[in-house]
Length: 560
Image 1 (cartoon, rainbow, N blue to C red):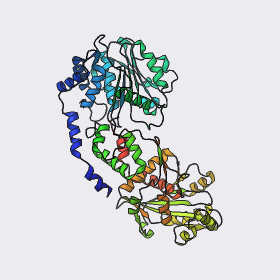
Image 2 (image 1 turned 90 degrees about the vertical axis):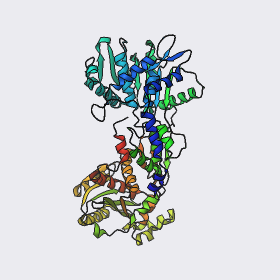
Image 3 (image 1 turned 120 degrees about the vertical axis):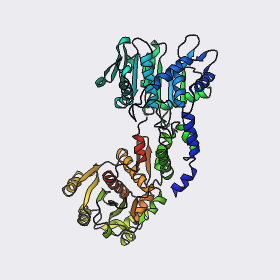
Image 4 (image 1 turned 90 degrees about the horizontal axis):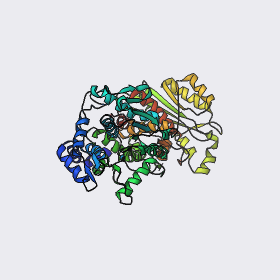
């Protein structure tokens, strides 16, 4: 239903038009447009420099993808490169722009753009003692950009022979001019000791303050033509101290003529605020490389998921439409239309012989404990979810008066398993699991790693236990797998009224770090859903190998 509705909306002509616009241009025409844009009494567009930039970069090979493939600049890449490098001051001949802010949706090649600019300047400018510094939120993250530069240099014999490379120190030296390129982390500790010539602050949406920026830019005053690059995708926009949001806001102030700063270059690719997810024009506005090296099929799948799953919409808007989206709690986080399509009456006898993975989420002693079995039907390539929900018998009436839920009737109808006493006794749950294990051998059992160590020890004596967290780090992956299976109709869920209520009442907490379902904020107990996620995670890890995971695949693509 969702697929059919979405497919009708997609206008592939718009995407094809963007591909042609970005790839089918003449160098002379592109240069002329840049001249028209920048030439005035104070500044001029250096045509010879632009030709030199184009020729130089076209001789470089891509650091990822097909070996030996030469760079072919897209129109938007040419415009950015030549705006930064070729617009000069008529009185001094120096570059106009001292800062460059590049803000774009994920996987549009911003890392490659910076790589090419740095290599061009590193080899063509004879600035003695110049420091080229790459900074990111962590040194490992900055190393990604360094490696892109390193591989590009290594792939070119001419470039390679003019430098000394010390990979262990993340250092590239051009001895003739005492020029160095190095990697630093954004901890602010020693950044003010550098008088950098070219600085790149990468992925600045992860910078919680402007400390690194402030320290490094003050040291750049020594040079005539320094450049400070800030590259990024949108932050949530909630934190005004966030460096991305500061740079974005500053750019908009210039755009609206509230600030006059002729030395600050910015190029922001973003979808309009509040646009429809399936607005193709807005896809292109935020993703100029869409359909070229940013794969359209993967992007469409992401968009469809954002339409179907509210938990994914904010991530899609921020990362792929490049919009500032505040993190929030998502009520009714599970799409119940899709959930209901998966419900079936399950004959357990038919599941014998199938491999089974499980999740166990222990509640407080007087609530509902969830044990969920997840079978993989290899023939039909589907996962079958069978819930077992336990609750103490002697407190059911008391709890019915408190929260108005008919626990007694639910137990009579078989939706709950009532255990003896006022509390859920682990021994009874254990016996039930052992009984099921006799007929449906358990491959692995997921259990809350912060749960009781005593119970964990008992479980480990019987089964292969996988301790799993219930925070964002673990649950983001689990929810992503679950939602993809739900959309693809690869789930069969045993129809259990209480389990359905749990699904309906899930509240998700969405942050920049990821997503998780909240036990505290959800109105009804969701222990069964958490147990299902643990079981599904183990089953998918064993059987799927990410073949349906467009999100994961897009994250692993070759372009930044």
